[in-house]
Image 1 (cartoon, rainbow, N blue to C red):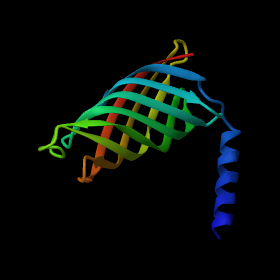
Image 2: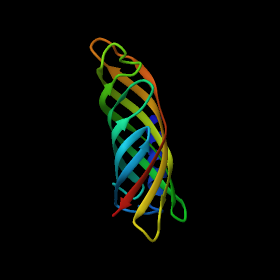
Image 3: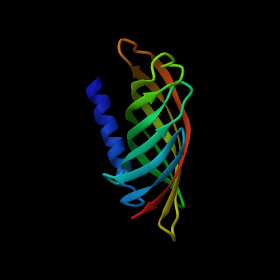
Length: 162
């Protein structure tokens, strides 16, 4: 049963990926929201992209530096608009906050889903993206391992395309 489901999913995604081409090959720029810093995105196939965001993460659990990588399926909607969905992993140090109230430094490992929309301008090399990234974060410090819901509900980015 699992094999049949996997084969059907593979055929459907393969059929969808032959209907459109990637809107660009690479893009680089900035991101604002729950992650503030830089953003890079590249298409590895017509409908599949890898996006890496790096910078500072802000939440009520802890502050910290973060690198978040996501693998996404992206499909054209109409006239430069695209929707995407996927998942990813984030890692980085965590500082202060309610998780580390007695300890100033720890480590964060997160798993997230990602979904959103992107607009690629036709006449200029610019793309704008808005996304949500709910997930789970695992904090590590000495023998203390809290698990928290990670609510990166809104991020916006602007990237130069090439």
